[in-house]
Image (cartoon, rainbow, N blue to C red; front, side, top):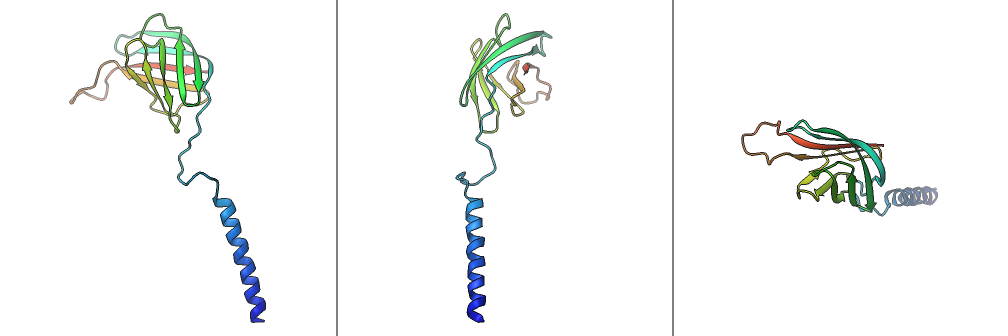
Length: 142
């Protein structure tokens, strides 16, 4: 009887170990952050706003994407905000450089397949500035 019980325990332990190995091995190496890049290539529409000057214009944009590399070209009539290039990280955050003035624009929330929002401060915040430093904002949807 002891040999029979030991045999059942061995079978159960083997099955549990096999299940644990199969369900736990996804090749990801652990961690919970996603390395998937959101597909944002294509046509977009939205707005450009400069909080300092009050400028607010409707724009269209074309987004080209090659993996994590991203280029945004807008219909805005003059820089900044006409042509930006940069990348998307594994959390779908964008870091873009404006071809017009060299400023860096970033997304403060993850980009989705339906919305891109990138911003740039109109001037470099200094120690003692309030949290209300004006920004330039491109807000695109599709």
